[in-house]
Structures are given as structure tokens and as C-alpha cells.
Image (cartoon, rainbow, N blue to C red; front, side, top):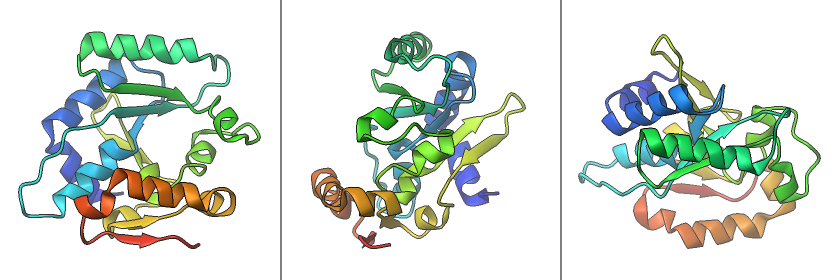
Length: 184
């Protein structure tokens, strides 16, 4: 159980609101992932009171029965109606294989393994009991150690894309202690 992450996320009012909204009107079995989780954890490792606005709230799920993009847009509208942020980004990972020219993904975990960085693949959702549950195909260690590591698939298929993301997002400026690993 990722106790450190649970403690941090539980203390964040916005995280609790986002998770409750996703549980109530989001796709069944959806997780909040990517920068929304990673950034909060890494920002918490600095004692300078840093606070950055969220770029988006990535909601991911896996449903082969209806992978039409219009369904994601409907979920975004429902989430926006419950919690107006303008940041919702809902993506059914059952259709995202087309984005990278991959074979269809088997499940959510398989889809997340196709993302660019290991620490970005950590997702959280709120159960009806109020307990947080996680998906983390590469585990939590890179997140905990502030390591930005290229995923094996990204290393094989688009290592320059990883470098480009690193440059564009300016992560090393935001997190000066960040360790970047470009090999597997």
C-alpha cells in the first residue's frame, strides 16, 4: 500500500473533490493519473511553499464496449457540471492504441505501460468506502524517488519524444532534484 501517497492525497482538498466527482459521474472504474498525481507528490518534496496550477485533470479508464471519443466528451461535460474547472481530460484507453500505432491494449495497466514516463503512470481512484486504490504498472518507487524514467516501450519506439517532453515541460526547472533516466 502506498501509504506516503495516500497521506498526501488525503490531505489535499482539491484531490478529494476531484476523486469524489470522478467516482460519482465519471466512467466506471476510472482513475485520476498523470501530472495531477505526480506533480502533487513531487511538489511536496520541496519546502519552499511551491504551488503550481494544474494543467489538467487526466481521467483514464478502459471500456472496449464503447470506445467512441464522444463518450469521453460526455464524461468531461458531466464532470465539469459537478466541478467546474475547465481542466477535465477524460480518455478511454481502449482507443488510445491508435494514437501511437500500437496493437489494441488489453486493459488499463497495459495502456499505461505505453505512456512516456514511469512516474506518470500512477493513478488513483476513490472507492465507495472512501478508500483510495491505485494503479501503478511500474510501481511507486520512481515517484517516491523523484525519478523521471523513460518507459521501456518509449525507449524502443520514441526516445526523442521523451527528450522533447522533458524540454517542453521544463520539469528539471520545476524540480531541481529530479533524476532523469533516458535508458532502460
